[in-house]
Image (tube, rainbow, N blue to C red):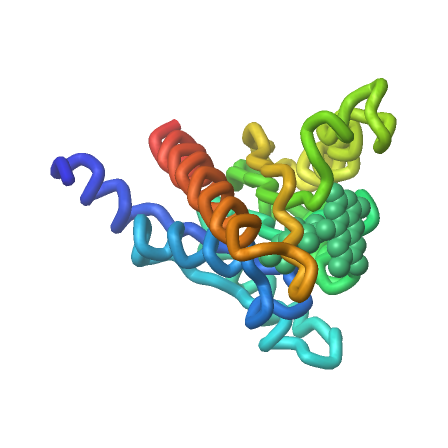
Length: 199
Ligand SMILES: Cc1cc2nc3c(=O)[nH]c(=O)nc-3n(C[C@H](O)[C@H](O)[C@H](O)COP(=O)(O)O)c2cc1C
């Protein structure tokens, strides 16, 4: 690794908010997070499923973690065309008036935000003529507006299709293909983080 990258990696804080409700049994999200941690060992991961098994978010602890972060990744599986309920509880509990928005709510200003999600649907499905009826990014304005209201610097999102592993239904070959797509997703996310750190 060249010296410049070593310096950047130690001077920039990366925070992953993991919104998966059961990361232990995840195929894609857990693998993606591990890959990012290997690439950037200083990454802090807030696993909402283990931190908050009853779903009650500690807003002060989350805000303290955010205060240290230069690059923030919201990592989650796409559930019902949005973020899982646990991730939404985090958004509602943590991005509060006076912290994230409002006249004195400037704590997230300038932080780089990367939305990184895995979807079960296919690229063909997520198109105007496909069975979902919309491109996947058509579901993203909620994240763009949230970032905008909080003064965060919204980065190009990272997402991947065909990521649903169904035990008892998916084959070993399906599992290998999902893992490989998760690795591709992780590589893209690592690149996106690197760009965010450098900009
Ligand atoms: C409750 C639930 C809702 C889901 N909703 C969607 C959806 O709206 N669109 C989609 O493409 N996939 C959907 N999926 C599939 C998940 O996105 C997919 O299983 C997940 O990204 C795989 O990641 P993991 O291996 O880390 O769990 C859903 C899955 C579950 C369990």
